[in-house]
Length: 508
Image 1 (cartoon, one colour):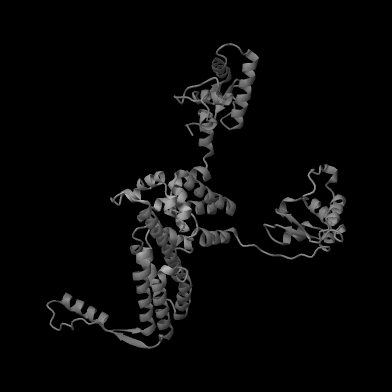
Image 2: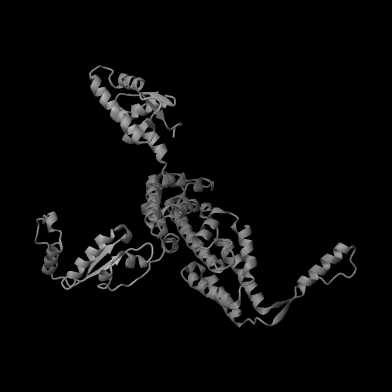
């Protein structure tokens, strides 16, 4: 515990890290709360150490109330197989499970990233890369969030215009925030120049920003409504998660005409009345969150009442005002076409089927088609949309071999210094690190490298003014070769003692 009256730090020796000293400290503080001890990786501890540690804890249980939390990655039975009976008999064991990391990922994407108050809109390629990196590598939510933070930081640092993204998404953008340099950059955006209109003034920028925010909000609502409608369909044509539909919408300008969407429309015809009512109720909760969709909300609630009152066993005749059947067709093909049209005109449908079809057609015409539009088509979308996937891969999907080659071949790339800067990749400077010079020389060699020739070449570079002794040059060369061998570029040669074998080829 820290005290405001104490300015001096308490210096503790290793001998003070024991239970008697900790017991005295706990009693002096007067704390009555239980102590929580967490063993994050239970399987990594030796069995003997765990048994002794728990027995010691049991001896101090009367004065040091504690709770022990063990992180078990295999099975709860591992506790009984690693601890002795006399230790287990002193414990009161309770087991609990945490959600898999994939569930936390779904919560983060659905409740944080795919919300209109998130400062940056992630392009589908960005989101897909982050999720693939999560699924195929480490299942680490921490790494996923680190990637999201990198996206935000890089988006904000690209230019002065992107700093306005938070104000746009929160609808706090004002004309005073748009200075003349920022306005000039806004007029240079591709989405503005493609409009082929006069240069924007701050008032029009604010208006376009408001329209962009409203479009993003309605797009998110439409995506959530579509996900609610199709998430339980067989084989999940549009995906199992909300992010799958989001990526499909933003990556395809003709999403409504895609085969997967048409397949969903066919499968919706088999939804039961109870399932459809549950989906409609969930949609109403989503639509209530956006005041711009109040008209659609009222119509959906009206159709919901019609679906509730619709009978699933009563058939009604659907007829359209078309011409009567032509009894004197000119050909057999015309007769067939007339018969098919007559069947379509006078078909029997259940009342519920009619209402369900009416509901789906209304959603397509008034919600999905107008609002499921990629925001790349909107003015000022560059302010809020981050889509530089190549930059993100550079930070998260590292290429170790290419990075090592760059560091050894051109050390000024990382040092950011002028002493090692070269115009020609094959140029060698005495100011470069010894391992870089040895690496460049080894790149000029064949499979077998003569150590004596290698040393002589190294000496001519680092000892141009003959100020170094032969022993110093040889010592520096030996250390550099050892580092190169440690990196895996060379190995000892069994055929010739004074040679080494080169193990890598190419520039990366």
